[in-house]
Amino acid sequence: MTHNWSETELRVRYSETDAMQVVHHANYLSWFEVGRTEMMRRAGIPYRQFEDRGILLPVIEARIFFLASARYDDELVVRTRLAEARVKVRFEYEIARKSDRQILARGYTVHAWVNRQMKPIQLRKLAPELEQAMQAYLSAEGESQA
Image (cartoon, rainbow, N blue to C red):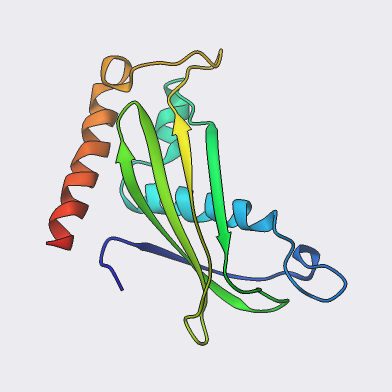
């Protein structure tokens, strides 16, 4: 396993499944969000710090590759990593079943920096300390791979 993945565990709830107890595909995006917000919190740059400054990170692109099905009551591990944080922010994900570590899905989301009026902003101008924290996290993660 790569060192720069942040891991968050969750259990598939009955409401997330269909009549065959297979997880509905839309839930994977919710699990990506759980992984993303937890990764940012652990990195010391929680979303709350951005939102308190009027900075939002809406999803502008998402992609999921489904490899196997998750089922009701499976314990899952959502692995998340920050792949890029410049004009856009890109997070990458893997969702695996905890019991056998089988990867069930992979994907990514891309986000834009915007203000409350949904106008694009430059993070380095509006909140340079948050931009520096994101870049420091990326640099530290890059060093851990070497």
